Structures are given as structure tokens and as C-alpha cells.
Length: 228
Image (cartoon, rainbow, N blue to C red; front, side):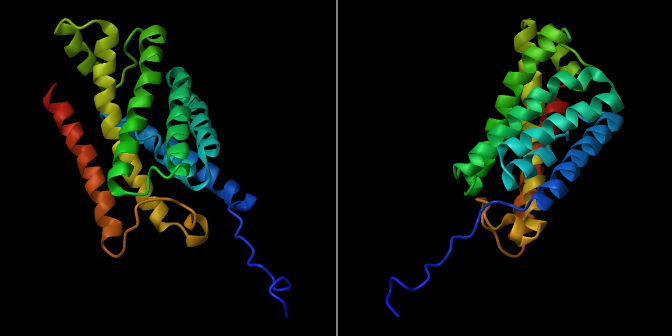
């Protein structure tokens, strides 16, 4: 048999079956909604409403993550009130950064994975601050409003005060969301995650790395609380 006649190995399709999409999107949105609801009840200085967004953006792609983000805020507005609805754009922006950063291979290493979460936090704050300031006058009833008031008392203007408080909250929230999302992705079936470009870890490192990331996020929260 000639080499031309030999069947060339077929490339494995990167397209996930629709059943996976149907399964992941609503579950991820529900995870966001539950996280946001728990955060609201406990009055935590974070948000916890983008873990499912991160997982979907990485596993399925940025625009599926954006869909999860939009669903999250739309549904949450019926549960907790309409305040969260304008912030759907923030959830979508975070999904696009996570998703495209992953597709470009920016999340392969531990250090770059950490930096991408910081980038997501920064982008989310850039989108969130105008909503806080121009739609809600700088306060929405979130725990971070106390920090905004403290910055205002220091003589900073409203925009700088809102950004200062929001970026602290966002850094903690997105680092925690990113590493909890990493742990969830590690636990998913391999046929869902075989094309992901994330830090490779074996054995206990699969647990240790996400835990360290969450601890870093929690440390930022403690700094935030110490400044109150």
C-alpha cells in the first residue's frame, strides 16, 4: 500500500457536542446566581457571581461565558431586585477576558493564570465604576459602599473613591472565582477539558494550587476589612 493510500490521522474536533453546552450553561448560570445570593445574604465584601462564568468561558469559549454572565444578572434581577441588571455588562466583560485570554494561551502557566485573573478584575472595575457612579450615584448597598465612603472622607472625588473600593473587591473576587473555577474544571470529565490551556498539575497540586489562589483572594479581603 502506498503512503498516499494510507489514511491520514484525522484531527480531533475541538467542537463540543451540543449536549455539553446545554448541560454546562444552565448549571454555570445557576452556580453564579446561588453564589451571588449567598453573598448578598451574608453581606460578604465580594460578589461570588462569576465562578460559573469563568468555567464556561474557558471550557466552551468566551461568548458562551458571556451568555452565562448575561443570564446570571437577568435572572438575579428577578430574585434580588433590578440593581444587578445593569451589571450584566460587567459579567459579560469578565467572560470575554477569561475566554479570549484562554484561547490565546495566556493561562497555561501558574503566574500567567494569576495575572489573567487580575486583568479580569481590572476590566470588570472599569466597566462597573460608571454604572455605580452614573446610574446609582456611587452606592448600591453592597459592603464596598463603606469603603467608598471612607475614600470620600479622605477627600477623593466620587469616581476615584468608587474605583478604589471596587478594584479591591474585584481583585479578591476574581482571584477567588478564577481559582475555584480552576478546581471545578480539574474535576470535570476529561472529554470536556482535554483542549483547555490551563496550568498543568498532578496529585496534590490539583488541590494545593486552587487553595493557594483562594487564600490570596481571602488575604485581599482581610486587607479590605482592615481598612474599614
